[in-house]
Image (tube, rainbow, N blue to C red; front, side, top):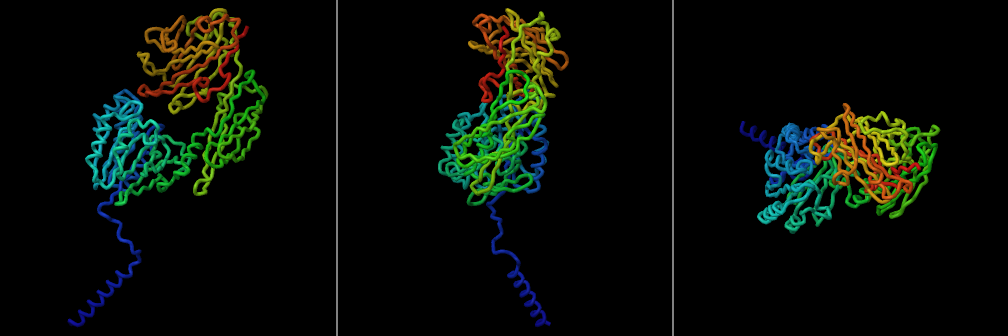
Length: 592
């Protein structure tokens, strides 16, 4: 019996040992070093926020189960001075982030602490706006690049991190998290002192803000500018750095290993090659394509000639291709483009724009927003094709006439005594400041007209808005009018702001007090009407018969959210200081 038991035991042992020796596995050891750990970095949620994306990203974070999560800022929309608004925004954010099954470290961005009140709210609600912590002998630095309004680090914060680094010189790695990638700026906003204090230690830096991905070896250390986790993006592909993602970091003895998990894919740190980044930036900015504006003699046309200008500011051959589609009753010749430009060269292509109908309207052309879209690209360092599409609006105008009025115009806020056919409709402004906050003509549009007699210039403007907002403090943002008047010798900038106590508006003349202006500003439901006159002698320093033209631009601040400190301004034509400005736009030639 004992012999039988011994034989069975030896047989079973042999089977077990043999089985262990023959397991179908590679010879690598288990990847479970007790000092290794995993965490996730999330990027910008706001700045043109795409609803639901950030919440979806955090749902996926819970699936992959990191040990903690840290951000690089822009967590709420911010840009408000209203505590009800910022508390509501933070409440919404908390409701999303509290679903995480692991800790979340907040790092501030410009949307979160864009003014002193928001910074104080951060500190009251969350605690420190810059801080450090250690985990498994790795030092984490959370830097506030928006401690100062407009961007910047205080000397107090710089001193804090210099001292923190001095006291933690024996850590195995240092990880830095910030919103603005100040490490890449000419004006580093104070960061240079922290960079100097890093010395020769091993570190890795993560930032955001630009809404596109960049990886760069800077000071022989890895620096990342992450794309977005729900913030505004054209989403033209991971290979040009425009994608929603989270970043999965595995901290190893030799340093962090980094994978970028798109919500539908996985990419390593070289998703955008450093060798390609600067040339991709040329494509992204879209300056390689220019469509020359056109000014017609009259408001009607059958066809006109303009030109496209291609510029290759990359260090390699640029391929430009695409089909210019018929749109808004227009056809284009040529309508197919296929060209290659050598580095640092340019090329001009004549472009004929033809209307399918006779006597088409320039005004209608502007208001239907006609875009020329082409693809620019090159072969990457890995010999892959990289293309980014760019659209340029066809900007047109015509020679306007400053007519002498045949009617007696009363400054009463009623535009019925104006000739309705003389009004210029502005459904698509040619220049938008803070364009992300304007959603189209239904959000806000305006029309205007000019006239004169022997002594006065008359201007009438009607602005229709889905939501009118006013503020008794004229220095605060609100729906209001701008009028720029340029003669050959003088530039006049006017602002007209609603007065809650009178139909006579507050008027600002060249940032100072108003002059001899007779004005009425009235509200009719969702319409704001401005009517005013001013002496011609205040505009021209010559006699009227010696003047040829007056350049005019009309703007409207469309303020849809009282809490927003950066509302849109809709301008009929590009501002003089804008890169979009073009010769002879907005000119009214004086009828003799």
